Length: 492
Ligand code: GDP
Image 1 (cartoon, rainbow, N blue to C red):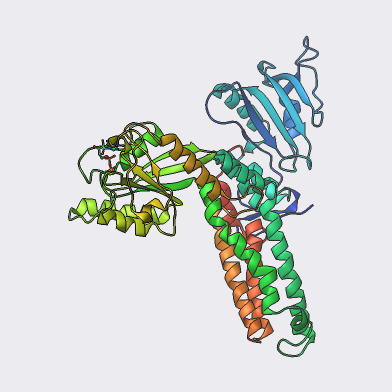
Image 2 (image 1 turned 60 degrees about the vertical axis):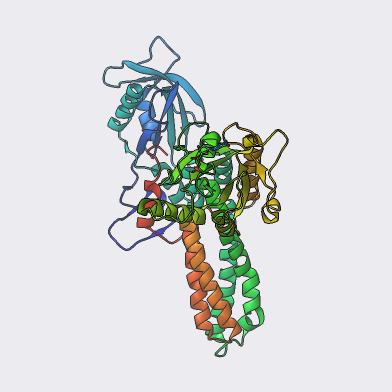
């Protein structure tokens, strides 16, 4: 059984069930419990128990429905992976508390690899808390945030990227985000990182052999097998590819940022309100009304999209408007996608030209608004540079062209979200570690190209290795684990 050993220097390291090290939140061999279902009322709710005492607690509290005439004396023998119908009763007075279904999953074939019991009761807050109280009184302690998943990780059932994917799956804002998290949970990213780790370990073995037995410099086995070019092919290229997937991965995970930009009064706020189907942004005929960027989230084509209505970009002497304009520029820089809005009646101003230049290099949709001011079947003549951008003619006022605009947005979202089957990077923690590993690998390749000393190459590769290992949770500081699992909900 693989177990993940967090590194750490301080007194906060304890031993978790199965011998793996854990932070102070896990005392040795203790049994944890929590309500596994969300807060609020529900048809059913689940109390989860994990640890050595789980089965004993179930025996103490559970009375099988049959025989029904003597529920208080009928002993329950936990049946592995079997759903038992019965009651949770207070052991002090034998009074049944709620009718439940109980499942017992002995370790290691369970979520945490420990003995797990799940009690499915009615979903009322009082019922669930009462059952949890009885469980705690029977020898479990309340689980901390993410502690079930943390145990699954520490006991080697999943790696850290998979544990993090559990949180992403729960927090997914869209179907695309959910699918991306599911791919990561399935081990897609873990596999890629493990392949990279194997490559480095392989190279390091050769280099270490050279350092120990060979001549000084790149002269022995390593020289034959490892060159700057081979290191680049085996490590740098795939690492770079993975690093480049972050932009899209993040956009899918956190929602695509779509900035609506244009000069003042072209109809940006009206368009935002149309797209989100409510009046969120203030619309007036007076230029410069939108100061702070207005944000609203919707789901388009399986993706969460955060629309940002920005202040109209123009030269202004109003200090408040200037701050708004600066924020617009920032929103534009950070945006994954842009809708560039112009007034179809007056499409050639200097401000339009300036913004058009600013959005080059971004994925954008060109929207000519106020088409309702033209006669039926008439479209405005646009300058050639604009006309080449496949403009879409809309009216935020009448709604004309809005469906076409939405499907154009959905298409662009799909394009931006990338392939469905690839492992992508979507977590800033992974991105930072991979970036550092990539830098070190580049330094190692340069040193090899320059016939540099092998021990320097070895040092850089060891650094890269360490960084990759932190991604999957090997050699990770207990404090980092604490920070990761704190973001989970209690009961997961
Ligand atoms: P923003 O400054 O770019 O956000 O523009 P607004 O959405 O505040 O709109 C400015 C003015 O243009 C308002 O008087 C709107 O009613 C008007 N407007 C917006 N969209 C349309 C449209 O499609 N057709 C017409 N005729 N007027 C529009």
